[in-house]
Amino acid sequence: MHIETLKVFCDLVDLQSFSLAAERNFITQSAVSQQIRTLEDKFKRRLLERVRGRREVSLTPAGEVFYRECKNVLAAYDQLNESLRGLVGKIGGTVKVATVYSVGLHELPAKVGEFMSKFPSAKIDLEYSRTTKVVRDVLNGSVELGVLAFPEPRRGLTVVQMPADRLVLICPPDHKFAKRSQVKTKELHGMDFVLFERDTPTRKATDKILKTHGVEVKKIAEFDNIETIKRAVEVGFGLAILPLPSVIDEERTGHLALIKLAEKEWTRPVGVIYRTDRNLSLAAKKFVQLLEQNP
Figure 1 (cartoon, rainbow, N blue to C red):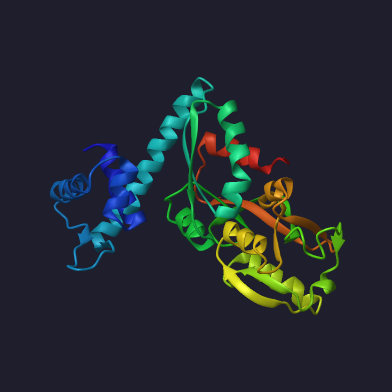
Figure 2: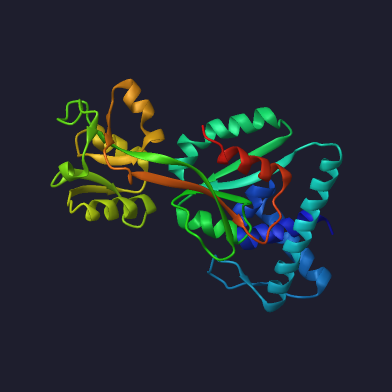
């Protein structure tokens, strides 16, 4: 039995998908099924419940024990590799990172590039998803690190704060605010707005700040990603409040105007999360240290 077979089993449970487990391990779905059967034959225990017509992967009681111990074996194997690399001062391996689109697309590329130039033997494997899935993937061990906005303290998770983002107002270049250098929150009352969907952390924070200042805006549209919001503002749907790093390019090209919001509370915390009970690889530790630094 190879260590790779244990990894395939854990990936299948974590990802809840034969196709995704196959893709992650560069094998076919039939190979995933064969490796699961090999494990069950070897240990003479059924590890997975197979229900016709259902796609999710369900563990048997024996499978739950096997999954837990497999995770320990894989963690020990990773630590073995790290220790051997440490003997020669070499930082290598792959750091799996889950991140939200707004941070991953606009803030992480420069950091990943800097990391790769410093540690060419290491690799950052980025996955993009929503906040809830980032947290879930970190907790279940699918990824080593999560990078997200408004990280919340949670049992079992360690949060490392990164430099916060300034939230700014954006509008079309022909809007009456476009030539202003600064706008007070109370001036937004009654304005047409393009907003994030209600369950996103940035939307919740925006709603809270507006309410604190007694401001109500007109919701014209809601979207779940920054790129769509920017395009909607460009064509005149309304104003929007977004993190500064995500709109610098549009301001430079003249597609959008960027205006500072006067009050200090218009900021977006950003942080790295990882499981408290997990010993980070040396490469992951170095990446977290890099993310803590100011740009």
